[in-house]
Every structure is written in C-alpha cells, then in structure tokens.
Image (cartoon, rainbow, N blue to C red; front, side, top):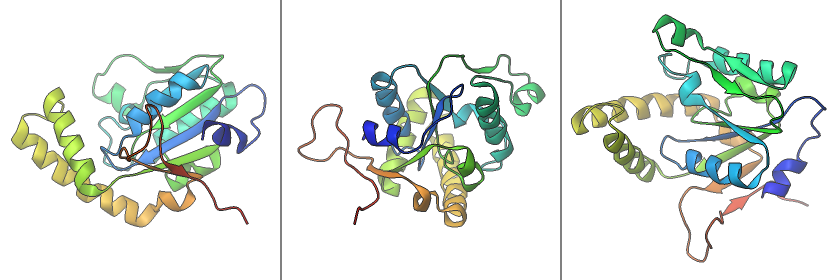
Length: 200
C-alpha cells in the first residue's frame, strides 16, 4: 500500500508529498498515521484536531487550505491558527524543512475544498457503532470532553455534525485507497486490509 501511495503523483522538488487520512471519528486514522510515519522516512503528521481547535465543526476549511498552501509554497509549515490566537492557545503547528511526506490526519482531512492540494487520499472505513465506542472510550480515558455523561453528549453532537458533513462532501468517493478500520482475521502485525482503484 505504501508503494502505491507514493507512486500516485510526481511531487515537484522543494515540497513534501501530502497524503490525507480521512474517516469517521474513532475510525483508526491516528493509529494508521502513526504506522505510516514509522515506515515512510522523514514523515510529519498534521492533525486536523489542531487546525480545527475552537473552530465551528467542519467549518475550518480555510485553516486547512492555509496550511496546505504554505507547504506547497515553502516546503515547510509554521502556523498559528486564528482560533489559537483568539482563545489564548500558545505555540505553533510546525512541519520542519526537509520533511518529505506530510500525513494530514483527521475527520475532514480529505474534504473537497482541499482536494487540489493533496497528492493522495485515504479513507478509513469503520462502522458508526465501532467508531463511536472507540471514540467514547478514548475521550473518557483522556478526559478531553469532560466526564462520561459529557462525553456521550459531545459524541451525539459530533456524530450529527459528522453525518451531515459527510452526506454533503462524500470524501470516500475521491479516495485513492479505502482501508478497513478494524482488524480482520488473518492479518499480521502492522498489516491493513485495503483496496485501490480496480484495474481493467
């Protein structure tokens, strides 16, 4: 799969290859990004959770496009999203010079508005109930959305917004690769079940 992804588009000198990893919240995108980062040299990860922090749900395309355009123009990224400044979050999102591949990881990473700036697009397919169970377990353990009751309330709000966004944007239809977001029988450690376009 990695060889296939890296062969999809010739990337001009001076900028990294940009690969979107999209899917439902809790589908396994972050896990996949960590796996790919280990096997593709000089790879950085750009998390949409950071880009979208304190932005309205799925209305942060302008931040993603700013980041991707900077990567195209300079080959690196130093970005303080507008909501970080507005809400007092310090620091920057940084992709250093010399990075040869950038994985844009998160729900909405492959949104239609970003398509012209992507070199490859993966969709991680996972059933709603599996994704919700994973997401709730993770969020409750990390305390990112409050206690268990608050986390359930957040996830109901999140999934309603997510379904509406996906119904309109349909990112899987533009994906170069579709992966199964659950472990299937017979797969070894580090293996994923995937499919690209059918060949005649």
